[in-house]
Image (tube, rainbow, N blue to C red; front, top):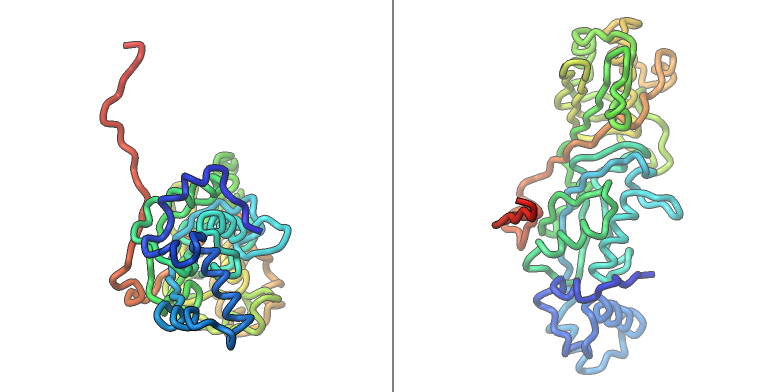
Length: 341
């Protein structure tokens, strides 16, 4: 069910510029589109001459839009939509339905990656479709962020070509995992950084990271998933870096794709290498086994809160000649009046 906003006038400026209310009896674009679609589905052979002419001369187009989304995953059960459980996708869809007046099934919102509960994102990408276009996205962008909780923000909105798909057009994804390596944890970073009180050896961890780079079968580093069926276990890791920033270690990995909990399992074995509990050469041995039980002999997956989906790369051809783009707006003050001076 769609929930109408309290101030309808705030959304008047968001109506598509190419919508003609007179053709649909003054109905909103979403309602007119839905009514016409239902009529065509229920009575495909009983269209009037006017309807048939309208169908031929005014086909129902679809426009595809790309979102770049940042969120704090602490309060959410991951990205993927779930009934009765708060997820990031649910919140974004609720905001979109309020603004576009389209139902969830018509928006077809799809994310690039299904981040787990507690995992954060700086550069999650999603797409959705509408039967109408927006010539200017700045007002839409402001309204969308205004309808979202403060721990979710749309960083960018742009139009994309029909061939673009947030999930299947991905060339690579980059994840970061942060580790606070000190005896006392920084409480300010506790929701975003994993604490390791054991003194780690970054050099040994860098040696272990080299073994992951390249194309491998990562079956041993994947947990069973009930959502993806039987995914291809062969993935290509493009780079795997360990960056030292004082007590903070940031592990950055970019790959063609990742299996369920693959990144967290790779970080887990690197922590064991960093603690010098196992040698770096344990990595190729576990890879060759292709058996998740082999990894379980040495470690379990690290917690989700240190992980962040940093960015997603695509084929640039899908972004050619965009209809519109919005990166948000900065508010400026031309004159400042101080009442007590």
